[in-house]
Image (cartoon, rainbow, N blue to C red; front, side, top):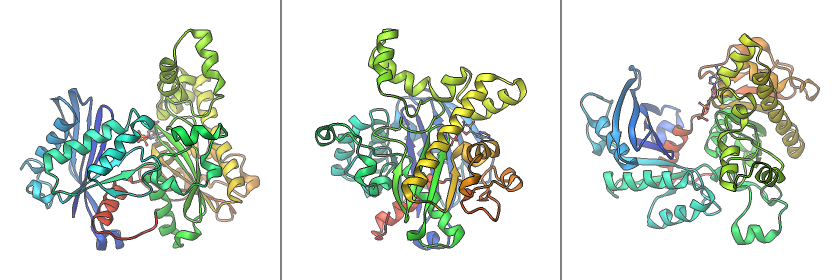
Length: 415
Ligand code: ADP
């Protein structure tokens, strides 16, 4: 089957077309046929399109909304110019898989989209006001353009974490806050943590139930996940994707009383403080330079910039703290797995996070570590390490495509 995978952000649309099916999944033979990114949707959009194995095409076009963006993508997909293998007309797109950020407590696995599912995703808008409305625009746009005859599946960022016990997901707030308003930890990046755990057990040839690892997704957004016996036991993001690790522009953990303190001192309201924590903090906030880790590493090395170094050091120390606390919570783990743009590409950051963990039995092999970037996977710890470390590139789109097929074909599985 050819699956169109859609990931709609507030002003962007990412897509991939993936050829997959149950037998292809079994043999790891599914593959991407094309991909693209449309930025600045609503306005003069910047568009990047690529047929697998060919050069990227860059263009601009005025786009009214997400539906217009999807329409643009569909027209390109079937146009003779793109000439994508196996795709001649819209009838060759057999299903659509959507990334949906917040599934709340309603969704513990991927589901076939119908009116009822749409209503429930709408119910979760209050939990993810920036993300779920954009995801819904993608769902509604695709339904209008392709017709309801083409099955569509929602794959939730939160679903993998639905196995967390109360001891992980409840905050120590008055219990009514949970009962009345569903205030609890949900966790995000679930599709990434789940994909990486799946690849890990494939690499090592172990069963799902024997997977005991800590996954660190370090990209623009960052999160850690304690995976015990194959399930998410705990994760660093919370009610929203703000909690936990230091991120590109998000603060991660802070003392909640800081909010009122800043409100009183700076005379700014909750909305501005939220913007500060979400958009002006993290690596950008500390360094005062950029949210881009590559640029910070360059500033540190070439100009010896003190605040660039500080931002990187705080980033690495927070990740280390989470490794320590998850090891305690899990009663030990077999491996730490790095993924995401930073985790997959930066040997320096991986080394800095793991430095000082030798007493736990983890020693990084500099040569192996330095050799893994740009989509390569493998072990980066020394062969005698008791606690091992791996790099495994994530592939959320592939998992969304696979879930789409399995959901349509009603293949029972554990999540
Ligand atoms: P997103 O979370 O938006 O999907 P990515 O997973 O692509 O983002 O991660 C983006 C981050 O990865 C940026 O901070 C970028 O600087 C960083 N990154 C990419 N390549 C490298 C590299 N070689 N060294 C250090 N950081 C890198």
